[in-house]
Amino acid sequence: MAKRGVTQLTIQATADAVGITKAGLIYHFKTRDDLLTALVERMVAELDAQVGVPAPNDAEPVSPRAKMAELTSFTFDMPASQKQLMTNMLAAASAHPHLLPPVQALFARSYEALDRGPKAGLAQLLSVALDGLLLLELLQLHEFTPDQRAAMRKTVEKLARDLP
Image (cartoon, rainbow, N blue to C red):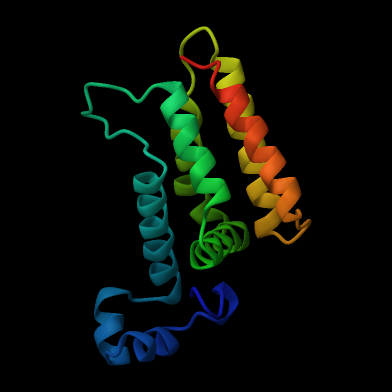
């Protein structure tokens, strides 16, 4: 899925890519939809791990400033391969509405992690701005120049210093 996208995902192509038989893959994923569901769930879990969403049993929550530093790095330092995975995840979720809930839950967890303290509004606004930047680039709606990206990063980092 990472290289060819959601529309070209087939059981046979996936089996070929991972070096197993089609029957072996069908044993675990009966349909293309089952395979897509599993892929989206895996991508969501990987993104949860990368952006520092705390596990439910974590006693010490991450500070809004630390969380914003993670999100800033995630947005501005994302490798091309990760961008392709995110693009595919969004394409799968938008083309198959039953795949939206795990993606929506990912975003909800991210915003909930910033929904505390006297500067919660600032933290959430910065997070929304980073998501907007990322979505514009992932959907190829706009490509910011390196100077524009550097200026935006500097501004986000400056504003995030006001967070607890």
